[in-house]
Image (cartoon, rainbow, N blue to C red; front, top):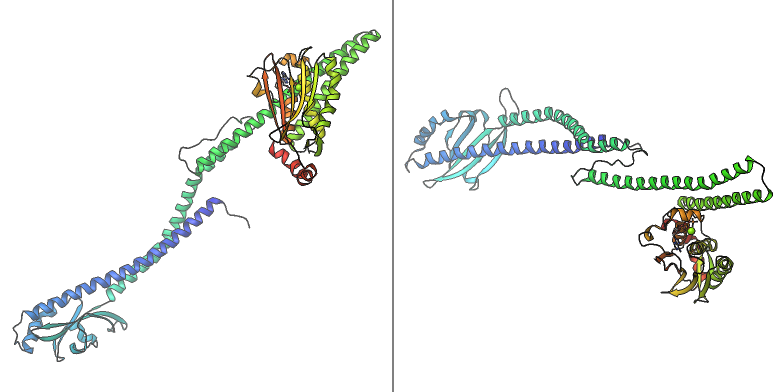
Length: 489
Ligand code: ATP
Ligand code: MG
C-alpha cells in the first residue's frame, strides 16, 4: 500500500491525538460541572437547614405548635427557588413552602430516618413541564429534646438547562476546534520538517563538480543536526573517493601518454627517411620496450580496477613455502647476476605451508624483488628469506640499496607514488607495484610492512598465516576467504 507523505501523516497523528484529548476533556468538564452544581446546591440547602436549626433553637422550650408555625410563616419571603418543609416528630407540619405544596414529594417522618443527612432525587411535574426532577436534602435535628425533620429541596431544571447548554456549546465548538487543530497540525509539521526540506534543497545543489560543499549543521543537537552531520561525513567520503578516482585517472592517462609519445616519436623518425638495418632494429626495439611497458602498466591498472570493482577472485591452494621461495629464487638468480648483485636465499621453515593464490603471491614477490633490484646499485646484495615468527610465515626481501627516507615511507603504498619520480620513470616504474602488493597481501589477510634506512637498505616483510592442516583449512575457508578478501580490503 502506498504510504502517505510524512507531512500528511504527522498532521493526521496530531489531529487524532488532539481529537482524543479534546473529547476526553469535554466529557470530563461536563461531569465536573455537573458535580460542582450538585455540590453548590447541597451546600446552599445545608445552610438553609442550619438557618431552621438556629430559629428552632431560639424558641422557648414550651412553645406551642401553632406559635412555631407562626414563627415560620414569614419564611416564604425567602423562597428563592428552593422549597422547605419542617415536620415535628409526630408528623405535624411546622412549615411548608408554597412551591412544595404543588410538588407534593413523599418524604419520610423523623422517627423512621437515620440520624444523618439523606440526599434523595425526586421527580415532579408542572403544568408546562411534565418531567422535571429535583434533589432534596433531609436532616433530622434535635431541639429542646424534640426531633424535627427539616427537608429542603431544589429543582434541577436550572442545572439541567445549564448542563444542556454547556454540552450543546461543546458539540458546536468541538468540530471547529478540531478543524483548527488539523490546520495547526499541518502548519506545525511543515515547520518541523522545514529544516529537512532546507537540507534537501542544499543537497540538490551539490553535484559531482561541487563535492566540496557541505550541508549546514545547526547546533540544536537533534535528529536534524545528526542527519546533516551524517550526510556531511558521507559527502566527505564520496568527495575523497571521487578525488582519488580522478587522480587515478589523471595519473593513468599521464603514465600512458609517456610511452605512447615515445612510440610516436620513434615511428615518425622511422618514417621520415630511409635508415640502415641496424637503425631500424634499434628503433623497433625501442618501440617494443615501450609497448611492453605500456602493457604492464595496463595490466596493473586492470588488476587494480577489477579489484576495486570486486570482481577479482582468489584461487586458493596449499603452497609449500620452500618450493615457492626456491621457484622465485631460480627466476631471479640470473637477473640479479646480470645486474651484478649478490642474491641469497634462506628458508628456515622447510615443511611449512601457506594457503594462497599462487599467481598473486608470485606477483607480489616479483614486485618486491624488482624494486630491490632497481634500487640497489651494482655490487650490493639482496636477500630472500622465509621463516616462522609467532606461528606465522614471514617472507622477507631485504637489500643494501639506496633506502627510503622516513617521510616517504607512509606513502610508498599509494598508487602512482614514487620517491624519485624522474628516476623511477626512467627505470620504467609507474608507482603501482607496491599498491598492488599491498592489495594482494590484504586479500590473503596478510600484512606487508617496510623498514628502511637511507643509504643502508630496505626490508619488506610479508607476514602470512601458517597453515598446519592445509587441506582441512582449504575445504573450510576457500569460498569464504575469496569472498571476504574484498570486503576486508
Ligand atoms: P612499478 O613497480 O609500478 O613499476 P615503482 O617501482 O616506481 O613502479 P612501486 O613498486 O610502487 O613503484 O614503488 C614505489 C616507490 O618506492 C618506488 O618508486 C621507489 O622509489 C620506492 N621503493 C620501492 N622499493 C624500494 C627499495 N627496495 N629500495 C628503495 N626504494 C624503494
Ligand atoms: Mg616497483
